[in-house]
Amino acid sequence: MPDGGRAASLYATTAISSSDVWAVGSYYDGAGDTALAQHWDGTAWRTVPVPPAGSAAYLTDVAGLSPSDLWAVGSWSDGAGTAQTLAMHWDGTAWRLVATPHSAGIAHYLASVTAVAHDDVWAVGYEVTTDAIYQTLAMHWNGSAWSVVPTPDPGAQDNLLEGVAAHTTDDVWTVGFFEAAPDRTETLIAHWDGVSWSRTPTPNPGAVSNSLNAVHARARDDVWAVGTWHDGHDNVSLTMRWDGAQWLVVPSPNIAESGNVLNDVQAVSAGDAWAVGYYYNTVGDRVQETLTLHWDGSLWSLLPSPNASRESAFNYLQGVTTLRDGEAWTVGLAPTGSIVERSCAVVVRDTGFSPRGVDIPRGEAAVWFVPLDAAHEHAIVDASGMALYDSGTRAAGASFSYRFDFAGSYAVSDPTNASVGMLRVPMLIAPASGDAQTRFVVTWASERAAPGFVFDVQIRRPGASGFEAWQIGATQPGSTFVPDGGSGAYAFRARLRKLDGQHASWSTPFSIHVS
Image (cartoon, rainbow, N blue to C red; front, side, top):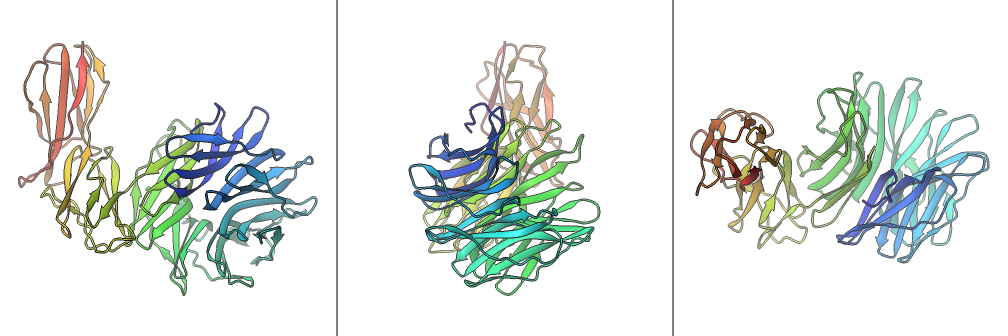
């Protein structure tokens, strides 16, 4: 991501198409924080100028209807150091400031924005009264001006709105939390029916705290909200779903014994949704690492996601956006600057897998997506003979994911149309070159082999015409290697094998050079 060499933080993203993606946030220019907008044109990211908006300016969310109609919101500080709401509009050519209402001497913040039409846009956040009480805040754009719309405050203490999402003009949701007692917070959800905002009853699984950070409304009977709750020991990821009648907690995975927080959620369909945030790595100094969950229509699964830094620092994913073909973008922040990640699903079309061959880094998950225009149901089945996975029948809009922790080449089939694809998972060897005394670390799996499985690893030494056995029937995930065949190129390949004889194909050879 381009950030001009300055520390940049990205808080939100939205995609109009695969070649039109926006991300917003802030960067430090040497004197203070300045609003930031960046754009992906299908080839590269570039920074797009935004108008100056005073000191301590942040863009916290972005939403769009078309390439020439997007809104970004956040806050800035006036000369007295009081935060004010910030709104900008993109008309296809430039970002322009749009005035928002505020009360003198009171701090105001906008956290989220959603757009139904060019004259129907909502933004939510909170304001801080002179006696330091947080109160919910909602604003509406009618095509010519922003105005404040009354929102419910559950009590006299702190009440905040963190996310907003619209399905239609009379079906808009906003989420946050409120202080139910001096030592307890509860989830807050309100619904706009076209006339007014009203609170909706919500579950609160945590005895200490419960909060919601984002919401996505896909249909009247399919709305997701995410956040975190406290179980008395640590934070736990929280996902809730509206089924048209009530909000229900949906179980979601957590990294064991660590704080888990979800900051955003997006759903392509009833069977394909993404949620992102962070968790605390309990090893060492409790470094925050990125957290990514995927919903396949039946359950949430953890998906590995990269971290910019793991050295006593933080890695947050703050926003996620999706496209109808299963592509997902996530953004966030780390000490080294902004984080941007892209996940492209294998599309399971009526005519076969697209693309047919995919490279998957070891320890990460493949995601398959049945497009919304599919005429038939499909299934994603391991074709290696080892029965590693079987998605069962998946209708249009559904998805499926499976994590590959071991090197090899894995055939996948769709019995519906007899199509076959291939997933290639490489080995890793470090360093990539050395001399006769170098001890190379060869890794072919993320963990030890499961009961009933082993790993086979072959080597091709310099001058040899083919591969020969090196580590056969291994259960450990890796080993060390000291060159034993002179100088030149060494190549390794690996596969997963079931003890009954079924096995994956060999991984793509990984070569090292010895001088």
